[in-house]
Amino acid sequence: MKKIKLLTLSLTAFLAVNVNALTLDEAVATALKNNFEVQGKNYDYIESLENVKLNNANNLPKLDASYGFTNTDKANVGFESDEGVASLKLSYNLFNGFKDLASKESAIYLSASSQYSLNATKQDIVLNTKTAYINYLDKQNALETYNSAYKLFQEQFEDSQNRYNQGLIAKNDLLQVQVNMSSAKQNVVKAQGDLKVAKFQLSNILGGMNLEKETIEKLNEQAIQSSVYDEKLLENRSEIQALQMNLESIKQLEKSAKSGYYPKVDASVSHNKYYDEVSKKLENKEDNQNIANVTATWNLYNGGYDSSLSTIYKTKYLSSKSQLEKTKLDIKLQYENAKSNYEVANENLETSKLALLQATENYGIVKNRFDEGVSTSTDLTDANYLLTQAKQGFNRAYFDKFIAISTLDRIIEKETY
Image 1 (cartoon, rainbow, N blue to C red):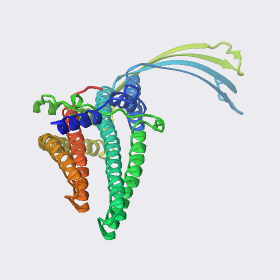
Image 2 (cartoon, rainbow, N blue to C red):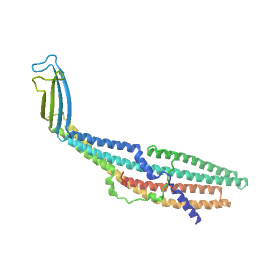
Image 3 (cartoon, rainbow, N blue to C red):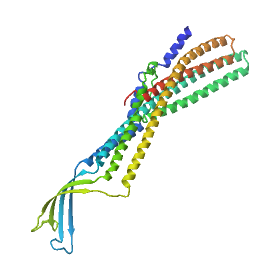
């Protein structure tokens, strides 16, 4: 019973929280703010908003000012050799086959698609941040486990050295313990390297945040409680919404391509002021003139350009629709895999707790028997390996459950960013 209490204390230490450390929530917030992939997608979204404004400009009138000067060596009758004209012109497109309206609607749908893509990227970064954060903790726990195993081998070597000096064990047994201790030391060195790499990976996700002097807070089991997941929410995935908005955009582009079959009507009003010899007013002539103009044009043939463009957009629409259906199937498969992984991880965690309890109990028994001279050095080595594997198994199962839940949260898009 005492050993069970000791195990409970060791698990509590494993789940301990440092209030001054970088928390998982802080890491996620930092990643959403500083991650370069998120920033790039955000710039794409801002560009799409400007593109909406750009297309909206086609529905507004245009105002132009101009000045022209003409010098002729031989003027015709009724014309001056030097003439200048200043003009202020207001023009407006009355009708162009609905092209401007369709282009504007297409830009609006593309902007919505870009926004959904931005949200999908944020969801991915949140999951990647949690994964990198957990990977660091996993490597940290692995280092602690291998350090613990190394210390146990050191104690075993010291005991074996004393026994050898007393003539109780053979030199071969002592050398075997020394080899095992050296192997455990190599595991510690490798774990140190893995931990350093894991910290760099987490730093990159956080936009290059310096973590050299940062302590990473450990997780508690309350932080990995699962939610209730509704499969119907898969239809609301940002990737699906983005593709649907893209389909609507292509529809509008196809409408704009048909504008070539319609006439175009433009209207303009201008005020012109004429000058003789650059700055002098004309004599015996009107020097001010207002002109109103309405022009209708209709292209009768343009080499099949409009027809080909319309076909291209129809093909793009069908291609995007296929991509949408494929994405729906992929997301459904993601969900089924994630559910299965969660069920396995949940069972593995419970099993690993029992395995750790048994391995801890077993090591204590073997160590006592070894101290009494009943068990051999090999028995103690095997017990040490079993305990190390049990610790590693518990650590992995613990983090696997958290990753499984985080993956389900991402697939359902539990959080909105």
